[in-house]
Length: 292
Image 1 (cartoon, rainbow, N blue to C red):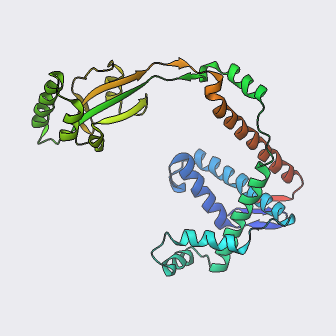
Image 2: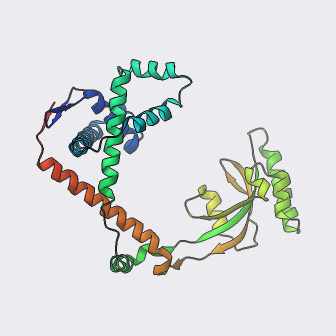
Image 3: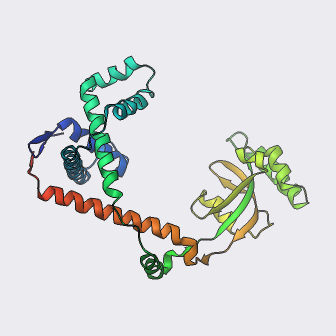
């Protein structure tokens, strides 16, 4: 990756930080490593990394100017928490050394991260919560979002298959289906024969909506009425029998039912705008240089 120089108010951002940011955003946004990105993706990710590193540095410098730096105790606690993921302290610091980071440099990196987080949290605390009029206005402006999707509650019996056992599994699940249709307890059959962990609950999978299960399983479940038992359903997990025990029809949600979710969403939007405006203000008063 070509060397990039980023200087914010005469403080350089290391190429090491830039590379780490690019790798992080590549995984977050594309589920790829940086070297797997195509040219357009790489350019977008690098631009994002530059912008966010500048924002981070501006916030850090502002926190320093206001005396809001994270204290040594908080920094050491964070390091100890990260170090606990390694087999030993020696291996932890050896891993840092391989990356070219000594103990003091790592301490400074964690201090900066915590300081930026603290300063950001303090700024976000200033975001005003939405009032009732704003909540109601959002509710009435988005009726398409104020609907509860259909849901079903189902139990199932799973018989796993392999190429060698397919015929036997088909015979077994057909026999179980006939027993259930003849009045045998579906829950008891699931407890005795199902290969799914839900067997302990009599096969009960609880309530679920569309998009939560494998397509063939979902289609079969939503085609049933409460009390009905499906034909044999095949999925990558094996062969299933499904019994729907309850169903909830789609319906319009009243304001009281979604008030808290709307308020949380609007507060999040207010916070994002506040943070963006703050960083933009810091940027307007800063000296920034980017060289490739």
